[in-house]
Amino acid sequence: VDGHERVDVVHYRQQVFLPAWYRMEARTRSWSTDNVEEVVDEIIAAGHQIVVWFHDESIFYAHDRRKAQWGPDSVSPEPYAKGEGLSLMVADF
Image (cartoon, rainbow, N blue to C red; front, side, top):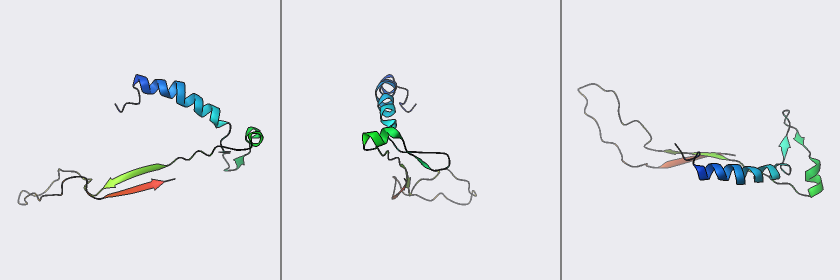
């Protein structure tokens, strides 16, 4: 379990985060299924809008690999580097 269902996390999500998100949602940009921006009167009346910035990222490490492998009985196992090694971060906005 990753902690998303802990009582305090569920309470915060349901009682704090989601209500704040729904209040803010009327002032955020939105698009139709045809990828056309929808202009909302509440945003125009407020004079400003909220831009929500989402991003996703992954980190790949040099030594991400299986420790077990198949090989012929005549081949001895070779040592490999320990630790995470060099990393590469891939981000998508």
